Image: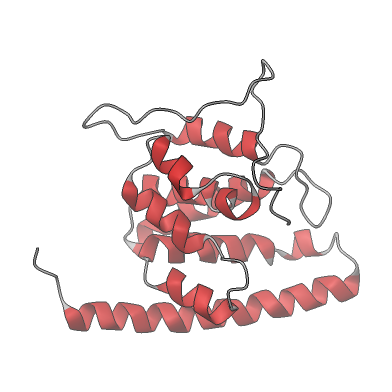
Length: 195
């Protein structure tokens, strides 16, 4: 999916560019899941996936998968769901990481979205290596890959394209699992860091 031209804004209902939400008061957790779902839907409005369906369905399915898998991975459930809903907004819309911070998202969520956002020209192995060091990003990326590689979704595509994508996603899942295992082993070896 192509990133919109720089400077393009999505108007609010009144036709004006919607300003970013101010930082929440001290101690507040930032935007919740409902607000984040609405924000993601607004940002992905008009975008379609490879099968011609409304793009917002993808982050919603990624969130549902992450909600099921995050507890077993030992990561924060809300953090995983927020990152799942936001995982493509920086990569595929005009939203920046600074915009997310300005809307009040906690630094850990912004960092996870950063890890999940492939940079222009970045090699897949380098991108997945960045994902692999953030356990929440690993959960969300696995959920992303599961949805992208879903046989039901792939069946809507021409057979050659579906086969090519299935092979690509399978290879990337293997690479991510290897990189995540290595990152987890390094983290265990390094032990807790003192501050």
